[in-house]
Image 1 (cartoon, rainbow over the protein chains, first blue to last red):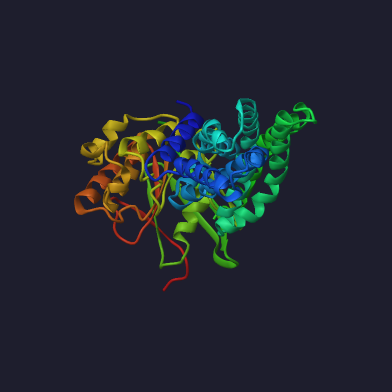
Image 2: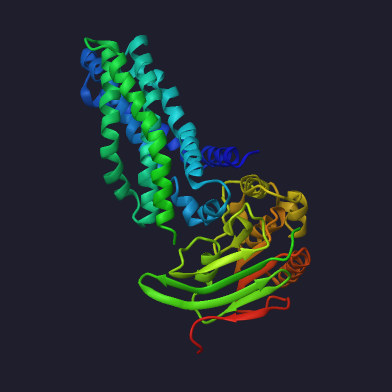
Length: 222
Length: 204
């Protein structure tokens, strides 16, 4: 097995075991979306108009929930030392860890979306559009969030810093994610334009995230 | 395994948190040799090991390894056994070991055999979270055996090991030296093998 696939498999295994972070995110997502109709009231038209935004907001917060531990646990138990020393470039190791986090914590959110869409009075097309935008947009959340997770290790300040650093970076993703979903459901904008920008944001963060995170970890060698 | 190795540090300095820990430190180590880094608490024993492992940036000087694999950097040819065990409590003993074997790569020995050597063959399917401190240390030692690296950097390696464990570890070090490896260990107590002392910090 190659070093990177070993790292991905290990992180997914840990996330899925008891006490891992994967289920916490889905549970949080579920809670937010289930509570929303009670808060907004029984107005079905209003619910379906707010639906995509609620799903996106829930998914964003859920995917950031467990992200601050991405490097912290490896730092605390000394694994990060060995990862840094190994032949595998730190950038690739960071990318592998983020990919594992997305597979374990991001993908379940997308799978849960169709079920939760029912609670928000979204029809098949609308739910499909939201799920598709989440599929395209959540990698951007994970890979930009990774930068904050790396900084949290280096600067020895945990979750608060993460929220302050990462939330502004995730605003464009949220804007274009919701815009693309709305465009698919009510128009009048075309679905293609915001969706392409969303994909572009993901691709850019896929490139920048690992390098920024690795630079931060290397700088903070301690 | 390879030709004669020579690790040499010239004028190495270390600054931590604005405080100079040591400066202009010279040291040598060759194949088949154990260098015991001794000094009082806070004299920079761990820092020296982390400098060699590339986990700290030296404030000055150079550390080079001659005679090793020219395609690999010094840290890539080192095993670092620190205070922290690099074990995941959620994974089993066997999973922890096989992950590091896969991730670190290179020449390797049989993982099951290494676990038997360190006396953990009865616990391979136990999550590492249930291990005692001594057993965790033994599992870390199994990593050194499974993945072959010529240079071992050990930070107080006999911590938490019982008497039988220390004897076992002594013979593991002998085997490593016989294969042409070298060991640099920060320690307060005897290691059970012949060592050359490297004293750092001011004399008490």
